[in-house]
Length: 40
Image: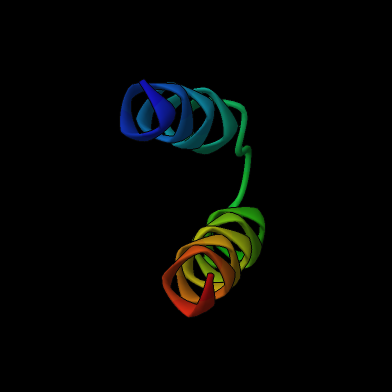
């Protein structure tokens, strides 16, 4: 269920991007979330 929640949140955040800069920031945040989850 955690993966589904993360994917849903990532999809919503990417859909909310209005610019390429915003999309890049969203992707960076998603990468940080994945990295922190992998460390647990």
